[in-house]
Length: 300
Image (cartoon, rainbow, N blue to C red; front, side, top):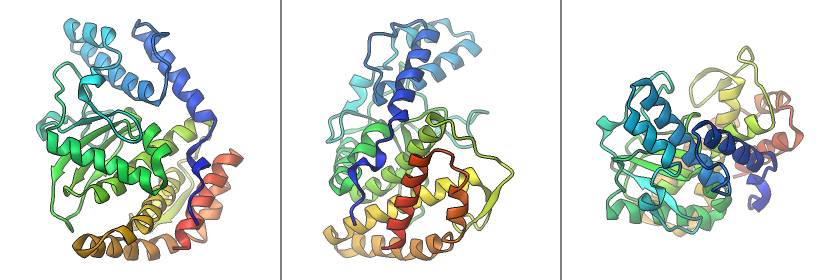
């Protein structure tokens, strides 16, 4: 069964994007009415906010003024056309990814010195977005994977690291193997995390840190927030992989087949706990979306 196109359409999310973008533009004293406050604006506004806060803390008046006068963070010069709309694609030096109190993982904030990714990586990203759209995830990628920060190039079969941070919604950080089908898989996974973060905030769904469930992916007890995230993002990649597999061959086909085989027993181990976790999701429509994706992945 194909995931319905409405799976990623949740009315409170666009409202959150519009409201939050307006608030950031007002805070930075930029023209809050200049944009439509789409998912793209929402993503870029958070980069502007983080950059402005950092500049203010370091008393860098020049940088602060730049962010206030560039709420779009020069995105037009950094973007590529894709089937899901213009996407910002960058590939900064790893030493330019700082760690700080806002994130357990390295991150990168768009700024006045940001350069676009080289042509080969821009082409790779465009093909990856096209693959994600082809297999049913256009809406997810359009609204929750606006900025792509490509990290290390690795070989097929090596461990690929990818992540998002809540302070930069709509931004994805990930390694790659130079293969768009694999990059699309990781884009879907991380965009899924961004979607669920937005959905939980937009629906005012607060999850207790005291309730935990066993996560087979981490092999440990995790708070319901982390457990529900895993039971959403990994099934999304399973669904994507199952759809992409018939269109692959050779080493790529074997790699994706192995990935799907690894994921099936991990997801199956959540069968009894997932319904109990969903009881803690107070928004009925969101709860049903999470159930639908989990069930579809279990059927693969």
